[in-house]
Image (cartoon, rainbow over all chains, first blue to last red; front, side, top):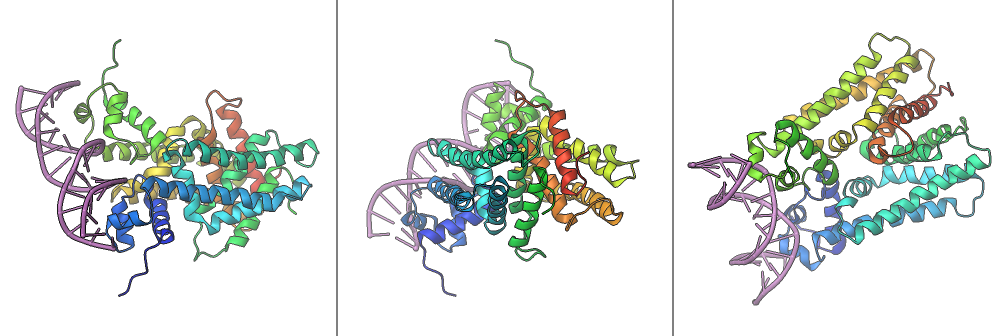
Length: 194
Length: 194
DNA sequence: CCTACCGATCGGTAGG
DNA sequence: CCTACCGATCGGTAGG
């Protein structure tokens, strides 16, 4: 029985799995160490603190969400086209990065300042970006919604929730889920089935 | 400066607020006591354990969800009518009982067995009830969805997420949010605007 | 990477 | 409702 070498990445990955399963405050460093088959103090050769693990995981994820978003919408001008691609990548990510999504959504509030505010600002940037697309679409007469804010929340959170029920060994894959949820999103803003 | 008398309900209410804010594992009994302006041991005159507080809060909430559901759909036979009312009460509850929804969604997994399984079964009963309505509607040719399971998840989680952004002092009230989200739900199953 | 150990804090109890 | 106190566990450090 040989053991993989301990690295910063392996510590982060074990932390990610356990934080997603039990929450940040529900996970002890001794459990992360046990998952890696080492003693707790050994972790400190690869991290500064438990808090830093959470911060790193949250920062990578929210940064990735924003990068995905810009890659999906930048250069596109049609609101329907922009919403379609923004939803597709956002929904897909929540099927392929379930642990990250669960940790960000549950534990960002457990971050200490100033990190908490910084991460919440990044999350809000994505939220506002998505809402602006809907506002633009309504203004252009392409979408029909009573409240862009409500529609935006509904679409966002619908996608986020994929992380809570998606199974890798389930009947539908990430691409199919992303396509169906994108269709839901478009019907919510009043654009019928494509 | 007088202080309200300590009761089982006041302890539960303080626990509910703090669990919703910081999570079950992120809340110390000393913080609940401080919020009530008493010392930690005094709490034990009104509860058996921290775990019991969580269990009581979760049980009351999931039981209430199921009661709401049955009050909304029992006696109705039309799938559209049933989905409409089931979504309306479910969405509305998440605007009026935000703390409860946040705690159930975040901390049910922190319950010890056998309570955890029992509470998860109750949650699943509601989930299956909602999905059955959609399956019935598809079978009757009233709804058009590719996957009742996906549509059911999307509608449920969209409603649950109301608890995460709704503000009592915001521009829209619980009834209006519930109506708009119910409209979203009906478009998701392919029933156009009413 | 380990053993040995630190102060702090946790949930909970004794006993009034 | 309180003071006093319990064993257990927490995140983290010393020092090799």
